[in-house]
Length: 121
Length: 108
Image 1 (tube, rainbow over the protein chains, first blue to last red):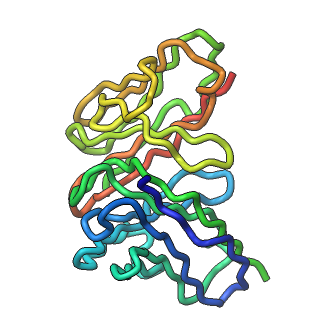
Image 2: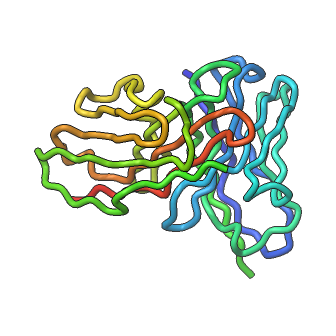
């Protein structure tokens, strides 16, 4: 089965760093873009950015450029989302997602289960 | 950046009735429009892509239409399991890439 499995919930303090992960299985990881989506408590979905693991081409939403870093390790089929200095406003569920078709920017048919990040002093 | 606007924010409908949800793009997204359903505590689920193509396993009561900047998701006869949040999403090449609408809550 094709799936994306995300790392577990995190509780952090403001100013701390964090890296969460999304491991793909059941498909050729390097040939599909992987995107990240934020959902703040009680709010809607926000697209953050995307990476193509085959060549590490990375694009960010203007709203998230400079706020987070997206990366991938092809050797272990894992994408990452990281923060260097968390803020309370980063508290949210973060989803990774994969488009339907290899190599294309397309609708997301495969989603991770989400990672809850809580930032509180 | 392309802005997606959904209406209404909340739609109250009775089981068995038809629901019509709207999504407007600030500029043409051609047919690159998807709809997702999200239930509490769950990840979103792809319902419709390319404006009108149902994803695998999606019941035929879900249909999508539109083009350019105006899109519609119609649920022909609401079932209890259809009451959820619905998001539209445009997907395109750089620089817009992806944008979600703010969502429509479909309630009984």
